[in-house]
Length: 233
Image 1 (cartoon, helix red, strand yellow):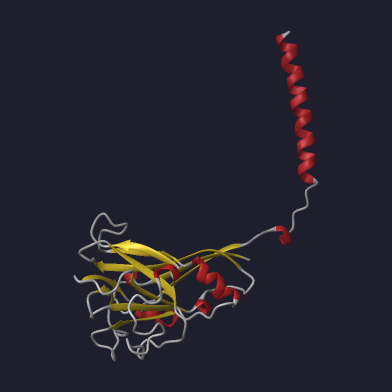
Image 2 (image 1 turned 135 degrees about the horizontal axis):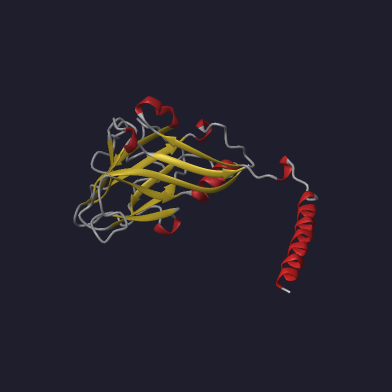
């Protein structure tokens, strides 16, 4: 009985295997049915500075900028508030991201070098007008000089940076913002890519609160700003 059961099971398994193989063979497979996933990582460094620009503006020096500095500050402090502007050239992706691509994720990463002495929310907004790395100032910046503008509710993302218990509570690491919603529009052509502005969620703090970030002018490549885009074609 045991031998017969084994033989019967073997015959049944073989017949089922033939059915499954035959069914799989009948499924058409061609390139039109395949989705190609790609990733583009843009990094701004002195050697490859054409992929991005960034600058900092300060309320205390309203006609100047920090476009050539190795750091940029996001600061909340009375009348000495500071903001950071950053823009990546998506046409530098190789191969180029087609207009019909589906962007699944986009992350902006900036290296924090020193932390605020309190936990601060750092908001990121898509810039509403063009600006220049060495010509932008506090006075002519796309969002104007009014503090806490635009409103926090209009931000693309906000992350907590500063001393514990912040999400990012240690210096010398990348701080990441999810900018997928903006890059989707950049790629589709429904919004002009003017980059982003990063500001403190509550500007004008009575006590100075400053987070310092690295720029494309840093010597160390691992500390350079990055934009990572994952997409499907």
